[in-house]
Length: 101
Image: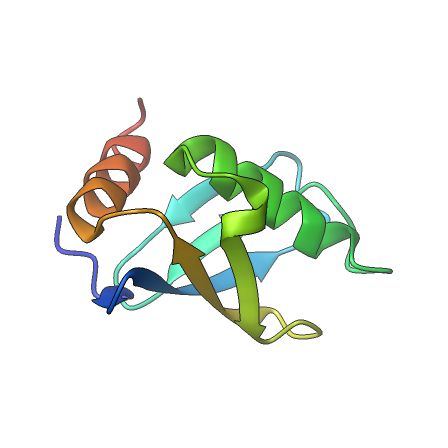
């Protein structure tokens, strides 16, 4: 699957994400123009942002400190910057996860 919401600029990955807080479970539900992530956490006091970073760091195999929310800290639509990850690996991992593995 071609994921259009992910690109590499210099040594970092830029990822567009739409979060859905207060969901039944934390998971990625779709991707194309934007990655859609359901989060169990509520959108208060940064809880959903912390859960998003923790979830993605685990799935992508990077440290939580390597993921920054560069836009949308108080919005459901976010732009993330991920350091220490190659575009090919990020795309492969997200595709694998979206296919149900």
